[in-house]
Length: 241
Length: 178
Figure 1 (tube, chains in turn purple, brown):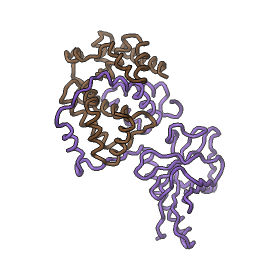
Figure 2 (tube, chains in turn yellow, red):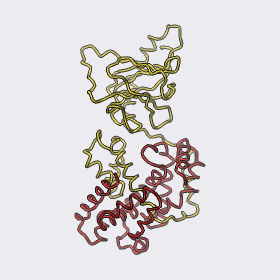
Figure 3 (cartoon, one colour):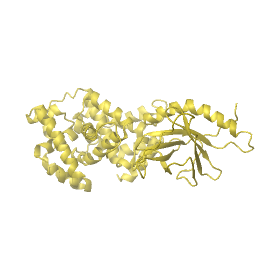
Figure 4 (cartoon, chains in turn brown, purple):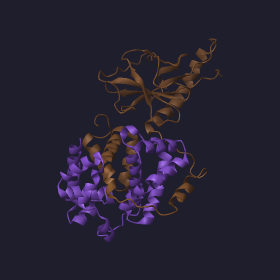
């Protein structure tokens, strides 16, 4: 695994190996675990070392756990004690969503107002915003279940940042409750509106739609490997005000 | 347990299914308790580590990513890190000349036990290609959670030498495995 990451490859490899072997002290291990949330390349390197060294586990002989241990575990997870499982999202997603909540509410309100009075039910849609909370794309569920993407015109006076020649935009859907997104395909370069007739996932209200920056051909990890540039959650706008 | 079965159980745990967590405990508990015991060498502490690990599984099962490895490996690593965290919290006070470790320490021939799986056989071959001390270090660190300084004391070597060895040994291992 190489490429995008917050650490140079050699350092990342060494940190991942030391973490998996258990050589780091308490502070180092906590920092590494934290960094993995933000650095997919580090998380992938750790997973790779875990996979390589996993067979060593057979060298520790199995031994029956003490009686009553399951009951202790059960007490800790009983309803009302520990609560339901928490789906911990990677923190970049949380950060982008925090911005999305502010930027998208305004933009969705505007769009809902535009769409109202057209005689048809409001479509399920979202505004995909960047981490600067500038709306960049709209994603709208077509009546047939497809997904329509349209880029916002660039803000007047602000030059649009061109995409690097060796990078592509990849579209992802994350159903509510899921922890891993599914690829919905690559966006053709340079197009300002894209129709995806039959997405890999049926787009419904509540689903997160993301666009990430990826190497040519898209992510090979089955999830975004580059930064998520735009994000929004599909919803059915209510009547405007 | 079959990995597909474990994976299905994890998926159910991520949805809050307590019976699925119990099934993992009943079918894999002895292996996982053995892992924790290898690192902590104390039954009460190992039980605490397994309890912590199952709480982590309960809360984080949804983070398991089959693209990155098997469910068995992932569950094993959750238990190992819970045991390592507990060992760190206890200041890793186990002396390196711990007689219990002497009894339990992994003999180099034990590497043949790795040959039970294809991945294990490849790892064994690559470990055997390493210098015997590099190999011993990696095994002691993984199975018994020994730190650099504990290994240095155990082998009677300067700390810096051990740190250099582990780095070199791991990189050689990595090159052999890929």
